[in-house]
Image (cartoon, rainbow, N blue to C red; front, top):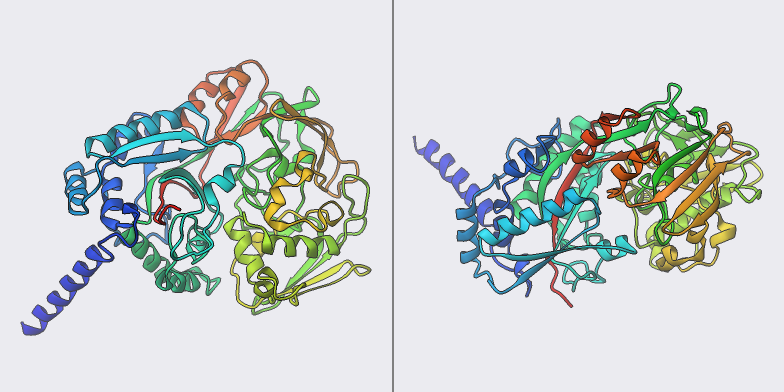
Length: 536
């Protein structure tokens, strides 16, 4: 009996520790108090939002990770509880006069309606909130990180950010929380150690307990507020015939065999064209149409990202048994869209540039930072990367890694190669501001022929493309991935292909006689980011 009582006491003590961990503000920002963050999550009635705004087409989230084998069964419950939220805010001495500035980057009506709903629910527990749509260089406004990744101050100007994490690999949900990489969450050694563990093997069974651990820690700390898991809906008009091409996660690059599609009119109209500039392709890997068709990759995935990996620009590749050495041999005769030769020197240049670029997809960032010599190169200690060696004449490049990256092959299905001739000497911190992004040159299946910013971009087939030559043009209208003009343009016959995560679009598209949609299950979590650094 004494032993049982001792065990129960120990368990209760552990639970008490979890519930009170860091239960106070850690700096001048009240959002650094986990009680406040818990209260914000509990103030949102996601079940009501699901049944009304989202027509039951979403799954309410309880962590960053979607439901599946890596989901921990021991997560704290932050479901709708306004009375508990009020009590937590009172306990934390919440400033009732403070107004939370919430930003988002989706331009659709559903997102505005969601923001209004959350604003009303926050008001019910005594929290004031405004919301605004970001425009321009959204990545910099959302994701610039502080110089001091522990103490701040914040390098961006908002309190809450509504956004998403769409992942190809489960590590991607957490790698950006490593000290110095996250714009909202101060780093700490505990989280860093957990991140190391989830990247320590390529075997899911080995990693499962580590994913349980990091989920539980993050949700006890509440450094994000998970809202919902969502499907992606690909839409097409009857002008397009995929000719057997695969359907997959259209936010990323996969083997969709677009050069063999048939387009009856000879022009495929789509969206996600540029508004002010073409976004560099290492941040939102396949989100914009130019990322998919203007740039090319060394490898290619099947419809399920990270599976059925084959070659694209590479003629062959070889990885060592320990995963620490990877080599590629390029196909002969590769050309940039301006007719110049594409060589392994461009590959090496792209890897080095990525090591110093401020905005980087987590998957790519983890790979390039794992290369031998990457840290010294990134901090300016050396002017080259010792882990990258190449031979232009043999079309071969070898990469040595200082630590295991379990998803390195998946990275090279997504990592676009950029032309050194166009970007040599660039300040990596100013990559997105370079004039190249007004009229980018790639090596993909289509090349840019004409662009009028915030009007249209026209792409034509690349006659030198190693994967075959398409027989149609692509006309892209400007939009972010949440396209407020989608239904209007589709009804006018100006939309042949694209994807949406807006469930309100699906019914409207399916009601059109010339349109169809296809639901694709994807790892995709929408959340509120919570700014915990002090403001400048």
